[in-house]
Length: 169
Image (cartoon, helix red, strand yellow):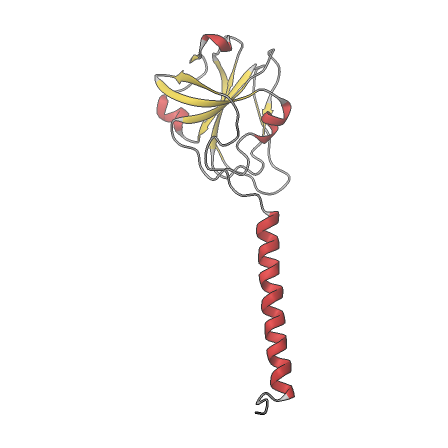
C-alpha cells in the first residue's frame, strides 16, 4: 500500500497541525495567566451584617492593607445584598480607585461614628492605567462599597448612619 500524500500535501498538513497546536497552546496560556473572576465572597474574609438606611447588607470586612488593596478586583458581579466594609483606625483623607473592578460601585466614606461624610455614586470600572482616584472630601475612618446606584435608591446622603454590630465599635 503506497502513501497517497504528496510531499506538498504532507507539508501543508504539517503546517496546519503545527498552527493548530500553537493556537491551542496560546489560548491555554492566556487562560492560565488571566485571573478567573470571583463570583461571591470566596475570599475567606470575615463578614458582618450591617444596615444602611433601612437596607440590610452582608459585608466582607477588609482589615489589612492587602485585603483593602484587593477589594472587589476581578469579581464579575456583586449580589444586591452584599458589600465590602474597609475598616480604618482613625479619621484621615482616603482615596479609592476602581482598578480591575468589573462593575460600578458606590463608594461611601464613613466617620468613626459610622456616619456618611461623603460618597461617590456609580463609579465606573477601570481596566487600564492610569485609573482615576475618588477621594473623600472630608477625613473618613471607614469605607463601604456597594453596587453602583444603590446609595441613590436608598436615599443615602452625608449624615446618614450605618448600623454595625457591636463588635465593630
